[in-house]
Length: 280
Ligand SMILES: C[S@@+](CC[C@H](N)C(=O)[O-])C[C@H]1O[C@@H](n2cnc3c(N)ncnc32)[C@H](O)[C@@H]1O
Image 1 (cartoon, protein in one colour):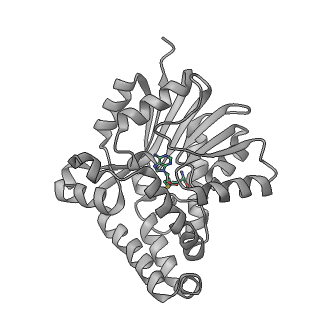
Image 2 (cartoon, helix red, strand yellow; image 1 turned 120 degrees about the vertical axis):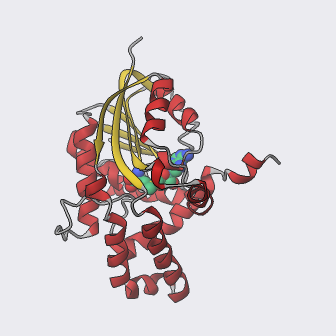
């Protein structure tokens, strides 16, 4: 077995971890959206669940899709984010994920909201998927790109299924290279399955994939505190978390969230990067 095949886990393993964390998130911070929250500033005391939806709305605004556009959301979580983007913009979304539990929740949410025609969910690897060439108007990676070890393949597959002139958007945490080292990167890979790029790496990857960068929006200031707020709320809801998971598991999960806060602190920026597939 090569070193690479030993260290890169299957994305489906990650899907299982997320399936397990989804009910924890719901009990701890009352949301099934699995991304950061958006805060106006240090005085903003918005609850995490509302801050998370605020970030989704900000992404929907920047994404620029409209009624009837076909969107592929790679790493769609539980689909809660897609529900909101589809409501805000009128687009139709196909969400893919490597976690079967999340896909089940996504289908239930879409059905319950009466949006099952507008929102489809499939369990498949977003880096090698079955969708036809030139079949989507836009592709979204919302906090999923960081989990993809092979960024070139992820973007090549996105480009394959994107129509000429279509939009690619990456919303994610990027490493601030001068504040991290190899030890930190190894920890991120091995403990969190994160493979962060820097902004310069992402710009290069876009170029090589034939994507013209249209805009870069830096939301570091608005999101940096997000996991700390989530951790504080989760600790305040510890009894509820214990009720669902038992004390040992609850404390392990709460501690994990606390470790995430300290690991990321000051080392990552948070960006919305939007690009266009050349019309050739
Ligand atoms: C941080 S969560 C974000 C979920 C969702 N985009 C949201 O904003 O709520 C990352 C998601 O990416 C999914 N994921 C990671 N790698 C993937 C891959 N190769 N293919 C499909 N989904 C993937 C995980 O299962 C998880 O649901």
